[in-house]
Length: 114
Length: 111
Image (tube, rainbow over all chains, first blue to last red; front, side):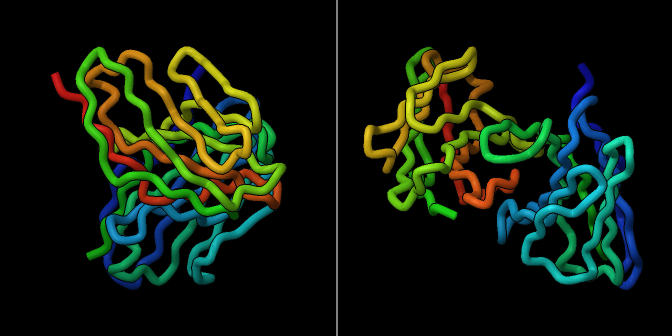
């Protein structure tokens, strides 16, 4: 079966702009989580969506937002981009979420803010 | 969430078993131990997870101590393609699928 698909793979934006990243989970998976990975901070949890509702949120400013559609596809948006937002953004999907379940990650979107 | 401690790096010869340790002394009774790995520039890959009992799948074995304060991931016959950063994670006690990644162990498999 197809894995988690993230688009685009690479993106270059200018400070102050906004960006939207897309994630298509594995078919049948209802939970989608987003993570940010930087060399300094490592992998950090952004938020999780389940059945179109944000179920959990990490410690990121309000400039980071997301949504999930009825087909479980998810988007995340970052407004007023800062240089520090340059990172690899990863999406993970799982069947229902929860503790006893594995998450499958996409290849990520590498965002560069100049 | 329970904190995990892993050695920053380990070496292993190709064909030998790689044993990666992880300490999680503050783990709660209902928290699972997960292992993921990340090969350079790719998304993390799920390896295995467990609660109390030892687990084995086609990729690896997970040995959890009886007091659950530590665990060991075993790659029985390491290959060059197993070179990656390995993350030991204790699942969020909230029950939601939130993974708190630490710095992991960089495993280098050499010929």
